[in-house]
Length: 488
Image (cartoon, rainbow, N blue to C red; front, side, top):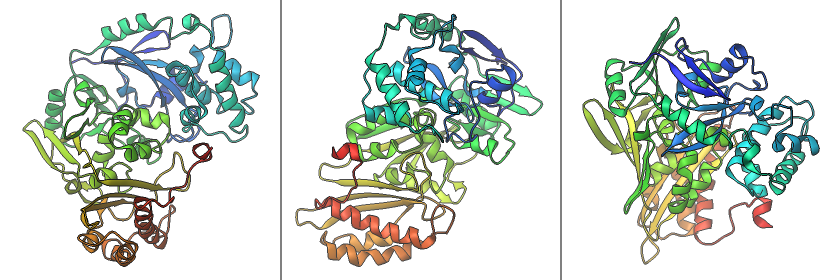
């Protein structure tokens, strides 16, 4: 086994053999390297003040993505390139065009959030030469500002795309070939295991090695994106030991659209899944764009969202409504089950000792199916769900309901089907009267809780209203609210 984590920090090779299992990138940057441009604001991946870029090789190509350093663990960084705000300006002090635009358009006041905004815009600058306003706003979903307001920042982003100079000056573009070569040389040929005073972290070299590790360590915490587990550490102060990192495993990062459906590896991030899902299931893709900001979507995985089993996870309800199948794997082999059967009770899933989520298969909706998913939250973007409803409907030639699946999150201890409502609808004419009669059946399916996100009464009424909204949309009523730029 290897005993060190290796990555590139700005231009320097870093090798670490004494790493705490849950040591964050933010703490490493600020406390050990004194790179204090990266700020701690919320310590939960919400405000974006800690944004940095992480470059990684995917199919031999180098991609840079914005991530939240406050919930990104060092153990997940092997063979990556970490880029902080300090790396952007030239050695003579000349600012990068993204930085200069922020100055020119007065995009900063107190300045605390500014480095994070710049890094998000830099990530956009690298990946999109001519972003429109909607794409700029999407890139900034994960960054919050208290004092400047967002208009000057958006104008800075628009300006820097209009006057884009040659990329030869850019610190990442001019060293891209060199960085790729250095990252290839860092690829681990063996499983990495590091033992410190606070526990052990493991980076398995392959999926087979992961299965062997979990056989020996069945209680280990498996971390893909850490967008949820990170908060266990930063907010709940949990001590996790041992920790197994899997975000580097290429075998878990495949997504393919075949004849019958989409197969999504457990390590596929929301960002990487988006285009494939959008081409086949646009309504599901629209939901994904409301899961966190770019930083969270670049780290978080659909497989991790399933494995965690949260009752307010955003991806399980639409996947259940679509009839998804889950594959679990262990050293003894693989087994497949309907995704809805995976969730047993709060904090309990049908995952045997040594098993891990390997992939999820999402059948293509049939040609005439109607599918919609709705996320209800206090903020439109980057907020935790209060209620999430997903609806899948197939009508026969006489407009009777031949197939319906309704799945909701935030309404029970697990993501759950509305079986009583479905029973009231099946075989009936798809009409307003049928919908009105079926609404009462939600009371038999759900007895939601009251918490700071919503009251029980609000959740119950919302679930009923979402069914009505789904009906209205299926018959052509303009029920879905549009953002101003979609209307213009």
